[in-house]
Image (cartoon, rainbow, N blue to C red):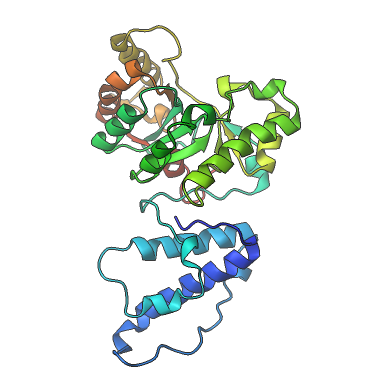
Length: 323
C-alpha cells in the first residue's frame, strides 16, 4: 500500500488523490500519447476528496488506487512518471497487492470483536508475540499460501527488525499491534496505554518506511476494559480478541492439532444430512510464535482447508466494508 510520512494528512491526500486520478486518466489516454508529445499541461480536477466522509477515508482510497497502479502487472502507461512528479519519491512504497486494510469510523473502532463476519468460508489466522520461531512460522505461511495477521510485541522485535520487512513483503501477511512490553493494558493509565501502542507503531514505521499496524490491536492476555478499547480507538485501533485458542499451555504438538480442530468442529451442524462448518466461518484463531505451534501449523492449515475454509488475514476477513 502506498504509505505516507511527514506531511499533513490533508496535504498527503491531495497529492496522492491527484496522482492516482491522473495516473488513471493517463491509462485511458495512453493510446493517444506519442514519443515527443508533451502530456497535458494540467490534470482536470476531480471531486475526489469531497466524495468521502473523512480525510482519512479519502486518503485511504487514494492510496489503494495508487498501489493498484504501482503493483499492476506489465508495463506502466507511457510517461506515467510525469504524473507522479508531484509526489515525492520517498513517499511511495508498495506492499503485496490484494491486502487492503479496513477503514472504520470511530463508532466501529470503539467496539471489540472476538468473532469476525460469518458470511464467507474464511477464518482469520492470528499469531502473537514474536519471541521465537519467527522465520520458521513465516516460511510455513508462505509455503502454504495462507494469509495471517501477526500481532507483534515491540520488545521481541527490537533485535529482529529485519523480520518486519520480510513479513510485509509476503503476500497475505500483515502486522498488527500487540504493545511494546506485553503489558496488562487494563492495569495501566491512559497515557501508559498510549505509550505501549505508539512506541510499537513508531518502531514499525521507522523500520519499514510508512508502515502501520493500524487498525488492529490485541491487548496481551486479552486484558481489555472499556477504557482500553476507547484509548486504542482514539489512536485508530480496534481491539481484537479471539474465537479459538489453545497453544498457551503445555500441550504436545500432536495434541495441539486435535485441540484446535475440536474447537472448530464444535461449531458444525448437520444440514440436509451434510456436515456444515458454517458456524465456524469468521472465527478468529489465536496462536503464538512458538516452535511447537510452528511444527504443526501446516497440518492445522490443511485441516482448515479440508473443512472448506480458507485461513486469511484480518484485513481479508473484514474487506469490502465489513465490520
